[in-house]
Length: 302
Image (cartoon, rainbow, N blue to C red; front, side, top):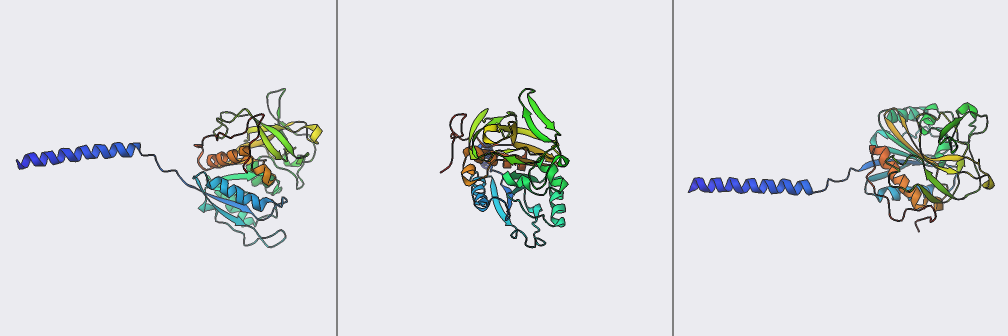
């Protein structure tokens, strides 16, 4: 009788173990949380401090990110002590356009990227550091701050050729026409950031950067927008969303997001969220929101 009870106990434990395994198999895995550092403090756009607050909120609402902010001293002040510990983060989001960082900080950031760190640059961040070769290789193309043909070629989509072209014509790097709403057109629908997005969508009023130029190496142009001559633009299909690689590090470069009203566009928010996840992990798990803009109807947060 005792032997029977022992066998019965083992049988029940085995059944309980199988049930536990089944429950655990069905239980969704917890989301991986990525650490993001937003750098701000200097910018030719006076509203960018508000932009930092907005972007921090957009990233954290996904449940995928925790976000810290590192603010530099004001323009013209001593930056010698600006030395963030990049190694604590998966991604650095640059909302910065100002004075050069200390050389030690530049070297630490290059090491961070080469070893697999991530970088997201937003709008005027691609104006920064015209003489820092590694940074310009990371962002691919940039504007203003003395950039010209010596900085590298222009990069744009040629509809007649159906491809991105590099143009070595002499001229300034960086310009934009009047702010206006414009259509963003997908050029790489298979990239994880762009999968599921409309082929075309209407972006809120913004500066449409054009004539950007730089090393233009290893650039995957995800989306472009036509810069109309009647708006004092270039008359070309200019890169709006790009990805790049530097060493083992991934980069997402968006030229969108000039003003707070530009950053309230659901298209800007969604691509920022998805781009940051891709930079951190090499994949995108976020669904496209139902209120994502279409080619005829824009969509913005309150």
